Length: 555
Image 1: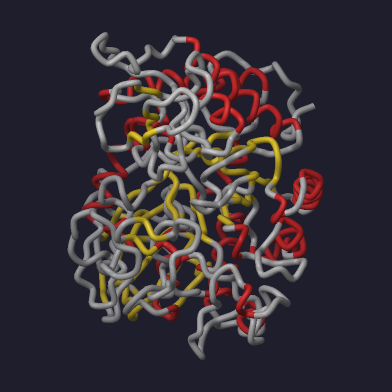
Image 2: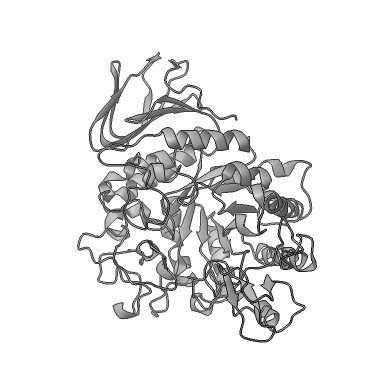
């Protein structure tokens, strides 16, 4: 039997058009393994450390843990340079430690997802070591021409000579999935059905099958849009992933692929179960969280975000992008919405402090997207500026290391992360004297951690608040007011100043399910600064349609 209770090879016709039911109910929690919990005192987190913290995560209510790359690697790019897809990196433990984590999570009703990096390997991978010697090997993209295009092409000083194409850093040679537009004048542009691309597609299935068979429930797929080169409209890349989806539905039903593509309207119809709104593709995510501080790249400034203390933002940009993607997806999967990630600033960043972010979590956990919580955001861990580069974390102007600091478990000097000396820590612990930690916030019912815990529990108990379903916006911007399933009212005010909105309803008063600074009266909605509330409407209550009533999803 498969992990999710279905025998391999049994999937109904057209079943791939809908994601498994568990994903619609999921709250995903991203773990950066090196910085989460160190069990052996070497200053680097590991899988046993994750396992030792599962009870806390189960209490929090998250049910799907996504681990950033934990496979064997020289760690020139934080593990995104993989030298063996089938072996856990020794610093994180062993394959048996992965098995123990998967089983311990399963016993608590939780799933484990791994990070899959399909577009490139480490330059130390055995595939590449063979390729640099063997002129007949085309698992990677090679050009023999001196003066080949410089950008991304790296000279090879061994064996076959020539140049290889790299993704990102020179240590990450690009795997060959072919070119959508071959050109005889550029012989490295092999078609997508050439032997090398076919071998790499087969290898992808072998890697996924190996970990599926060990109990992994899915993969977050790194840079999923990048596989086929020169691919206008991502047509051939979409076909590749549709092929993978058909294989998963046939052989491993119930497993999922979560894409780092950043264009859900394209990637989900192609075959992914879900895709992110991301900081480097489009403006939807940044229009919510990006306040111009923290890890900033080459993307253009967009002005104030909605969850801006001064209240200068708007929900318009997010709603337009979400509506377009939701229409294209048409129930075939989900748009994933993260609080942050290992590459981008945390919610608590710059002028936005942890006492301001509870309404952001209220939105994240009640909007019909798939919520993804980055480790530590639930206690208000902040983006820490001014840290040194660590394992490729400084990418041009992007200081990504500020979002990768050790998890803060308690108020001790090392924050409960490790028993090693601080000089051995993967990155320094946040030095702020008022830094938050799990133990302190667990003891405080009014803490951000308890807000998040209660909101996750409410989402779990209330099908209308989960991913998918229907939503109707009643009032845009401040406060943001919307109905889920025509049965539950949500109010979110992401700014410092109070805000009000009409309450065009008839019938008995709604029942309060969660309230933090919001009052609902016959005369209207009054929301204090940084407030939120969730209400259940009384049976038979009618809410008049007004502002943005056309923003809705299908069941």
